[in-house]
Image (cartoon, rainbow over the protein chains, first blue to last red):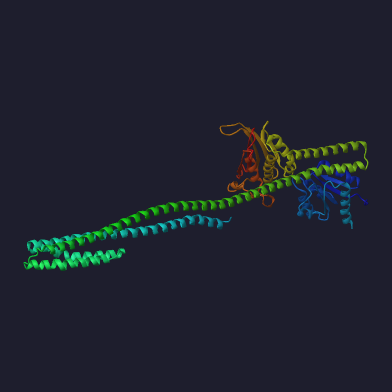
Length: 123
Length: 462
């Protein structure tokens, strides 16, 4: 694990899924902020030095694609991992983010991909 | 069959009777010309008979004149004789000509003229001169010879008249035969041509109707393909929704299991297991809804409209949430109709999906069902209304909504949803109507579906 815990922002409207994901990431040594929708996610993204974002795609109000676009506009260097329960996402959305994965692929895959994103950033 | 072939067949059905009737007209014209020729012959025979009769009368004048003068020596009595000469010569020439034209032998006239000249030169002229000179002319031998000569002449002219009469009668017979023939030929032709026109028209019509049938068959196939396409589109949209609904709880369960594997306190373990249990219950609920949806039946069954609408709303709930829509429901109890559940579900999913897509975030969708008692002529049944508060549909667009391939959703619509829905509703003997307003104060669209209770089976032929 890196010297100081990394700060990760998780955005998902699925309350249970969000809490479980937070637990997993914390056990893996990350500091985790959570938001139940795009708007509060963007507020946290502005207020804290977030180092990576784990973003759900299908959310009421603002979907993951729209949230990602705004985040990119503000801090383009922060990597975004887009999660989706849909098998196929439109290419204009996937091109916005660094990585995307389907929900249900499991915690190890999530940790590996997130680790890769942050590792890339370090190099 | 294309338009050109159809036009050719129409031309054929027109030309066959025209050609046939022209043929009949030609045959009729030929017969009429023959008849005219026959009538002409009759007329000529009649003329000849009249001329010969005139000759006979003029000869009587001649003889009477000569005999009167012989008896009285008065020249006045000779007048008929002299007056008869020129007409007699004319009549003889006329008769000769008439016989020639008729094709009869004109020499009978020539020999008659010779015999008549003999009577005139050998008897009449010498008798007149003798009477002028007061010579006795009462010689019995001479007078008797002259009479015999005149009788012979009369007999000859009578024979000519008789011959002409025979010819005229024969011609009349010919004419009558020709008339009979004409009638027979006409009847036969009418029969043959009538049959020919009938058979050819029947053949042509068969060609047209066969081609028409083929067109209808291919249209029906195309329609079946369209129905299948729309079913697939609906199924595809649902599949995406369902995958989303199942993946979310599965993701949570999978992550919870990962946490449990790593070791947790007994307190946490119980909490995680509860959470996992709840998430799995969600999956079960969804799979039950899917099973209910695809329980296809061949016979119409009793459908609880309220139950059906509730299960659809449950399925569409994520879409509603995502579009930030609120659903208001008013359901009538015991709203039962007999029908095909899978198809009716397709109709209601279509209507609600349309309402979702027409709505702007934060607005509401109303889903209402009500019972309608039977009124005169209209069966009792259930009315389902789905209303949105979207921008509404322009009046000139409204009539096109039920046409296949008409869509207001651009690339995202198949343009088949309402068309298929209308087909399904009508198969259930129901009615589907759309009411829409675009004014600022009441904009929005309401689709109403009336389904008759139909305790007997709804139209089993379709």
